[in-house]
Amino acid sequence: MSGLDRTVSRIEDYALVGDCETTALVSRGGSIDWLCWPRFDSGACCAALLGRPENGRWLMAPVGTATIKRRYRPDTLILETEFKTDEGVATLIDFMPMRSSDSHVIRLVVGRRGNTAMRTELVLRFDYGLLTPWATRLKDGRHSFIAGPDRVILSSQVPLRGEDLKTVGEFRVRAGQTVSFVLSYCPSFRSLPAPLDAAAALRATTSFWRRWIKQSSAAGEFTDAVRRSLITLKALTYRPTGGILAAATTSLPEQIGGVRNWDYRYCWLRDATFTLQAMINSGFHLEAQQWREWLLRAVAGDPARMQILYGIAGERLLPEWEIPWLPGYQDSAPVRIGNAAAEQLQLDVYGEIMDVFHQARHAKLAASDAGWQLQLALVDHLQRIWNRPDRGMWEVRGKSQHFTVSKVMAWVALDRMICSAEEFGLAGPLRRWRSLRRHIHQQVCRRGFSRRLGSFVRSYGSRHLDASLLLLPLVGFLRPGDPRIRGTVAAIERHLTDDGLVRRYDTNASGDGLPPGEGVFLPCSFWLADNWVLLNRRKDARRLFERLLALRNDVGLLAEEYDPRAGRLVGNFPQSFSHIALINTAYNLTREHGPARQRASGSLAKRATGVRRRS
Image (tube, rainbow, N blue to C red; front, side, top):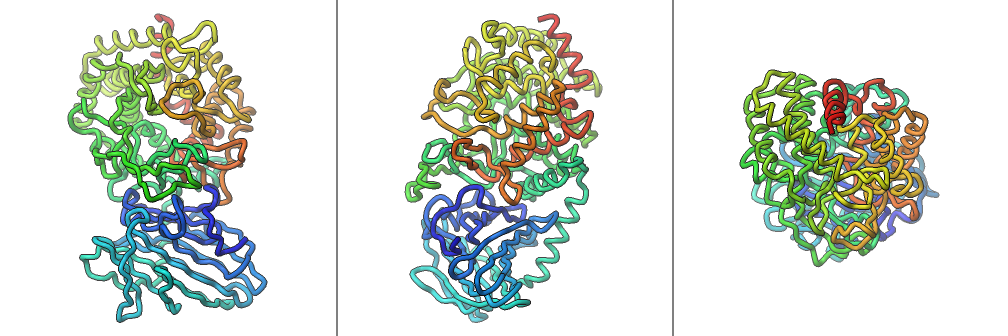
């Protein structure tokens, strides 16, 4: 493989480095093809991932061909890529130290054997590959790149030169020698960042990650996989606020060449309970508390204006627009910035919010009277709108429908409010809530279940399935052994799996407003394993889980989806929801009372069963 290969890599050929405020994606060939500065959701200054090298990248690779292998240093987010050439062996170490003020990407080239010829090529293009910065050489030998408010400084002892609007250089690294490069971001109107000691930064970054992950709980034979997913989740957490974004990227396609390309650099409410459970079961109560507090701040305000997603600091205005100058990943256009789903009505998020606060109380996370007052206002609004059609948890761009799972999650909202009031002595109109909870349950069982199919269906009166129905036993709507749940799981196994992995729904028949075609959805595949655990099909669950683990790339990362026919990952990457699902399923398999049973157990399951008998 050539280190100077100019083609965009496969999605699974990227690794992640980050400082808990932004991330960079590094290809196997040593090219940083995606880097947004200063935040996750800022304009990319390296956007080759969605275009071409001239849209911004930072290559560090051997001259000529090399065999490549890579890994993360154990229990860290420090990436090591080993290049083996005819001349020698060199290791590229990539990482981003935690910020004090400015942000840095550090690349160290360490000679292991022989004398390896290397080349670096830096192409910075601000605003998603659009703006070429003004490049100057500073008096101290560093290189400065400025465009409007943005400035990047490159520091290295390697002689560098300008060439065709790129900054390039060649060098050799001998065994035992280390050559360092430090790329630093600071606003152009502020003073220059001080030079950074790369070796000291490496020690500090190693210490940070190992000290953090040391808190994590074991998951039996899956502990290493869980730890890698936890580190990935931490890397996708915006440190100043505690918000956890869905993915590090925008517009990586759910089908190569397709138009299902979305900006996932935001925080979705529907991930809330799964995220909280993953954090609490892993031993990270502080992160769980910060996530709950982020949710409380984000949804505060007029209940009628609650959104299903927010910016990483809780921003609400996320207008969607398309970039005309980027062709998209492997010509999968359009490239979208922002996400119009923020404007949709999606009823399931009310259930998620009420559930996450209820689970937080059970975990003894700090609560407040203001939190309960907000919940009262939200559920009061839900009582007026729950019977409306909505866009569903998959955020369809077609016609609104009465999605079954949307109604189930409205039931969850009322159920968790009732449980919180009864278990923690909180005041609320319990009689009214119980009546509406019973009514919604009866309606779902009557209109959302098909006797002909022996299964719950995607929407009221539909003949189609939806993998979100796997949530019904996980949230305690019905017992796992209920014949209607068994029938639903069996129907999804028969009709919504592709090579044993689960599709969200049939895009050819869904009327979701988009051309058909996407990969299998990895979180739904984990949910199927969770259902099998609840049905005491543990061997099947373990087999599927191990299959899903095998889909991770060589450094343990997952995208949103997988294309079984092409044998490759698709969708935004790395995807927090996939890693959250991995963590929870690992605990379901290795603990008697894992997250799936926690969420639907005890008084919740008893109430659900009682309601079912009355329905």
